[in-house]
Amino acid sequence: MTYIVESIDTPEGSFTAVAREDGTVVASGWTRSTEQLLARIRPAFRPEEAQSGDVPALEAVRAFYDGNLDSVMTVPVDLHGTEGQQAGWAALRRIRPGSPLTYTEFARELGNPRAVRAAASVCARNPVALFVPCHRVLRSDGSMGGFAWGEAIKRDLLRREARSAA
Image 1: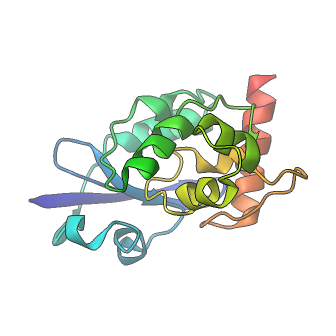
Image 2: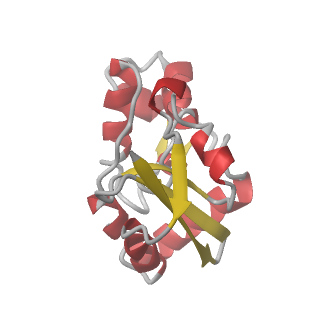
């Protein structure tokens, strides 16, 4: 199966999505590097080939940056991980824009408030940034914590969401 790759410019820099021919996103993030995105997918599920083309999900990204923060939540994604990761990624999609959780609160959402490291790992292993909004999880002291695409991008996204949600 051939996968399609497209990049667009955003206020936070280039955003690229890799999608199946049916439009389902398998990897995304703030980079123009297809290789960097594909490396975030479990090896057994990595596309063998990716070519430039139109990725419909990027219309939702444009809408997000135009203020429709929920647009990216309707994009179909294809995620491969453990049962716990799958549950975590689904839970991340339920976090409302402008209402970030701490890692402890996120762990509680996953059913184990003491599993903060596991909750953080779910965020770190998310291959479809923005469509699964792992940027909406913070350290308990309110600081950014880690983000694959950089703390500055995470901060900008949270500010944008807080302004639009207000």
